[in-house]
Image (cartoon, rainbow, N blue to C red; front, side, top):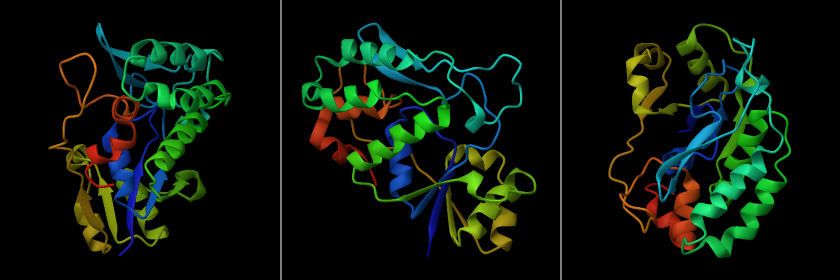
Length: 229
């Protein structure tokens, strides 16, 4: 029974994002929908001695009210060096930072893409490789999407021959499950509760931070703190 996950791309997402990808056979990045400001598309949080800090990729938004995520361009080509400097400053004391410093430094400093979707995909696919997640990744732009939001999601499932559609708990507020059931596609809601704590800098502990926090603090043991990988 083929399992599918459909989600917009996020910048250096949290651990639950990668857990979700690992659960399915195919992950479709839904990036030909409207870009939303102050969302996870171009930003995420890290831990610092002063508390949580947002790392935000600056993008072009002025006058582009209806641009799609995959049409969103970067507005500052120095964002990658700035982000890496902040990460280096705040994770230098993490147990495994030295071991992975060169790898992530190279990744950041060669991140010269012009579009947000390209950047997000590069991070997502690289981190999937780190966790040995073999799920196939595709883009929604490969498909001919028609209908209302629920119908588009359903059609992505049908065109991919998926029988189970995995989605986050927030989807319960808007998803038409009846439509999925009538088309023999089972909706499965992800459970992000009961994650284990790990050795994290700067108490108190927070789960809702970038996956980089887990990698730099736990290194080769990071996989043990995911639920499904």
